Length: 200
Image (cartoon, rainbow, N blue to C red; front, side, top):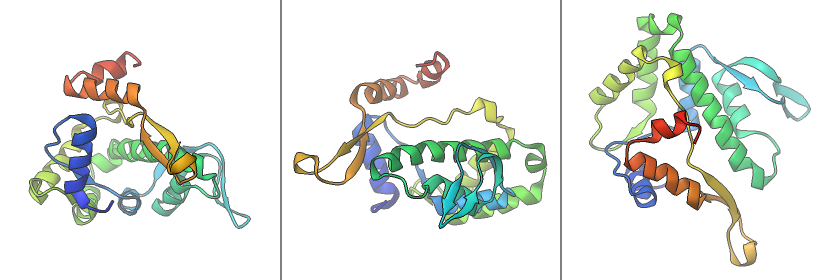
């Protein structure tokens, strides 16, 4: 987004009233490169992605390249008011697949694979001024001891609205007030893990 890490931090802090110590911004191109460095990821594809009459991503459990995963996440020919919400769900699935791949023994125990991954991330991720490359590398290295089952990938509760007078403008994704505030309150009190575990 325009404004980089500084604007991202300010926006999140204003919306959530939660202090952000550090931030790392990762776009789909970085996800693509990370996926390629991992040799692809496994994703359950609910329906095939067909572009110009050609099946680009088949339905079912698929081992996707970075390019295929990016195409699947961004969809093809979806209605505008469905695109953003569906894309967020697919982005979460892609991130979960990357974390699962990081937990595979052939990746965790392969120093060459980790060096390749570190190179991709440190070259591609935008970070705030307080988070240097050494800290980012240390954070990534710590992931080797993290099991995918120990990670929850969640998104802030949002709702679709149409901007402009009379709702005639573009569709926007905005926080869904009540559930969003409940999630932010859990973050502020460091109880989000308990809320997720209870199914909240």
